[in-house]
Amino acid sequence: MQEEIRLKPIGVIHSAYQQQNGTPIQPSLSGDSVGWVEVFPEFEEGLADLEGFERLWLIYRLDRSNPDCPLRVKPYLDDREHGVFATRSPSRPNLLGLSCVRLNGREGRRLDITGLDILDGSPLLDIKPYVPKFDSFAVERVGWFARTLPDEVRADDRFSK
Ligand SMILES: C[S@@+](CC[C@H](N)C(=O)[O-])C[C@H]1O[C@@H](n2cnc3c(N)ncnc32)[C@H](O)[C@@H]1O
Image (cartoon, rainbow, N blue to C red; front, top):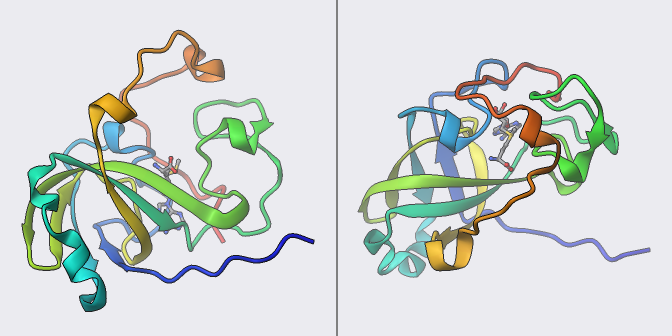
């Protein structure tokens, strides 16, 4: 039996989206949806120098997804099933979400961001700066996504609690 890992949220993500149904499915497909990150006071010192970055990775808990997640899912962008780890489904073991958002400004422990696919009130677990040299790769294979990469798609409630 593997040991359990307990995580402590470092803040909360605020957005205009209250439910999965109708929420953009990735930051790059979300237009200019506006939101903000509230970092808890005990972590504020860790935000020093973050304002120099244009984009951030947010790692958060997909707290309103179905935790009983099947290991094969039918994702938003396909009508065929795929292994959950070959998708970006919000219902997955550990319910971890990863979004690369634009940082527009910082005031103390408030970060103003755009490009959200995140529900209002999502518990924030970590922030990392987006660094193209580290995080961007030219690739030739994108698996089953090659068949379907639309410009705008919204979620429905298939992965909801
Ligand atoms: C397809 S997932 C991708 C999330 C992230 N960009 C990723 O790749 O890990 C995006 C969807 O997750 C859902 N979502 C966002 N925040 C959530 C939360 N706190 N609980 C449950 N579902 C959430 C929304 O329906 C949104 O459309």
